[in-house]
Length: 561
Ligand code: NOJ
Image (cartoon, rainbow, N blue to C red):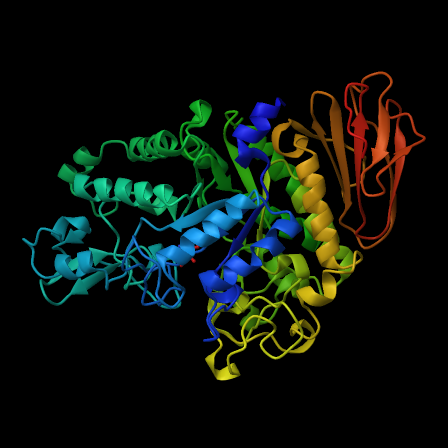
């Protein structure tokens, strides 16, 4: 890896941290997180070592889908601050060496967006074709709904004109018509606006839904052409405007289809995509104490070799349900049984509304192993706020809101998130063992043995080893299905990570092929060279749920630790 690669293609070895401004830090004392509060916490994020902030939607919104229902793409919700406050945050983050990407929700607007208010007025309104309408009964589409608890169709009949509009998500989120050139121009303006304000890219919501053409007439389909061309043009626009801006796609489809969203071998599509399949296989592997599902997904993924400038974003948790939709019914059942057996822990028959630590019964060994595994996977790790301190969920909250409770900074009333009276807090904190008096930043930050200390070290190690983001990675077979050994082979060093998914201790014998003569073995957690010849087989001892990281370092590698 050349220095220019690792700095220019910053997303290839970034560490992403996603947060909702509303639940991170209240700066105004009204019980709602805001940009003024976030600005004060940028140093915390810099100290943790994250290199890219992903801000969930902060635009004006009726907030029926936690901000994913937008009424103005060019503003900041007044509850959260102003555009000026937004710029202060971006500028401060840049000053501390962090990139900022923001959620871009193009599939749909809120039904309260002025465009839709116009569109529904009459069939000849100039905004009519900004959305997707049909004049015939769509019939039963209940098998296509994304939120089966609340919707039974992806079409809604609108009384005013007696026609149906498309909404792949909730009925209050009408789908925009991207076949309409006016809509496409507006999208370019939105991207232009936020890049002028300094953002480094976008997390693009629901990409496959933006590009699918359900409900489009023959004429519209012709006008749209290949939807992938639209994606490529959008990526090219962003590159022209920023040089190194990225689109990180939410694309939960099979790997072969994700490959197309990357722009296949040309790599002129999305720069990054979340690995939803890999995430689901990790939970299956953890449930079984068997690493093979992870190996299978890594191998399948690698059978679609990425272009140099594209990258996987790995994650264990995000703001949504932990979806298990890509597992078979029986695999999903195994994960439910292991990590969320009660009905109130499950949503939409396909996912879990829990955070990781409660799913792992709070077992510190297993939680650390899970994060170590995440950071060892080839790609860019992405974490959700509060994961670094092991926050839990609040199951009393509806659906996905269970994992969107406020950040827990201290053990005080309001958890350092807000000093407003309890009744004004934007969401309640979890009770019991995961309440702020047990889980908070203030207690963990000074303690190197804490989960915070562990995650901070992982971030440090990830940044220190660009091999993890860049280098081809092999699975090293050690003959024990519970143990995953990965070797990321860089030019001058091989990073070897070893994870034990079983509760029992293990000793494995590791033999990494093609090691340079005179290489030495360094234990990265102990930050010390080992008296072992890495060209030969070497033994690695692991506790139950243990994890170890090594570097096999040639003479040319000058890293000291
Ligand atoms: C995906 C987002 O992650 C989710 O939170 C949202 O509800 C849907 N898209 C609709 O925007």
